[in-house]
Image (cartoon, rainbow, N blue to C red; front, side):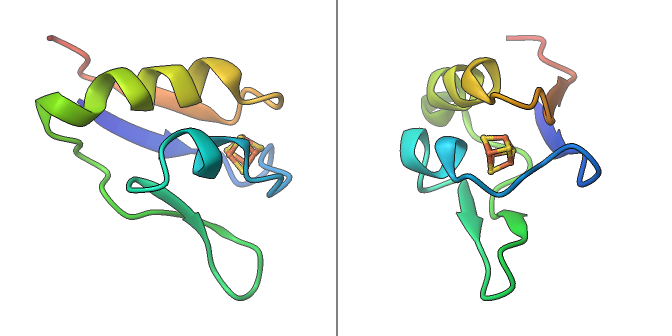
Length: 66
Ligand code: SF4
């Protein structure tokens, strides 16, 4: 799995950060940082939840083969 953000869509509202704080965070400039772009198996359900809840559809998953 690889997770990416489209910065043209992201509005830095931190919804994803609240759902998967070990993977997503906002930096000091309110830019979303994906701390773990290739999440290990035990984090993937939370990442999928965060992606599905992004109100801007700014997150996408590549290579979601498991
Ligand atoms: S939930 Fe979506 S819009 Fe909000 S910070 Fe995360 S990627 Fe950006």
